Length: 213
Image 1 (tube, rainbow, N blue to C red):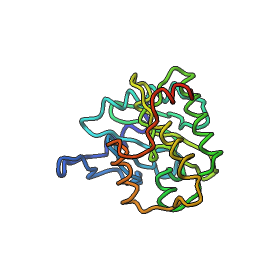
Image 2 (tube, one colour):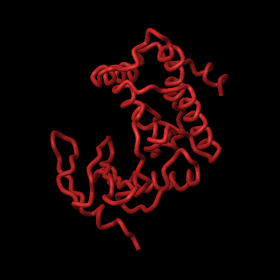
Image 3 (tube, helix red, strand yellow):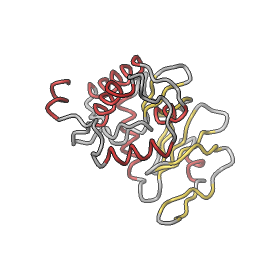
């Protein structure tokens, strides 16, 4: 029996300026945010999160559920509790993303970067290929641990150097005394756009990354 299916089915979407926006949901769902493929709610009275995918992204639900099953038991990833045609239910992670840490001036220690690196290595040992790793899907929990979310692209076959570039930027810039540890959201978003266009000096050559691995 699907315990949370009716909650997922209560979520309604509408198109606004070419984008899907949630327009209605059950009162037991607490809105937490939305991304490129889904909207996320915390289920009231529980420590679980409901992720409902947009009508044209429902195929991602099955893929992400399967990946969470492969990651089951690893401490830095949420556990999957239920999945359906257009939704998944996972652990609710109480914490801040690395993006939010930079926005709010919360320190990101070298130990946390190392923990994230080990978590990604653990995923690789289970036959996955972590991709699309970025500042918004790496979290520091309230307990001071690393958690990785949004793993739908962990089975892509193409090489993704995002995480290696993040580590490189952390070492070469963030750890330096002159580097600001707090930045406004608009600036972080601009840096993200410049990174995608390869306009920042953080991209490492593929040969360097292969040697590092």
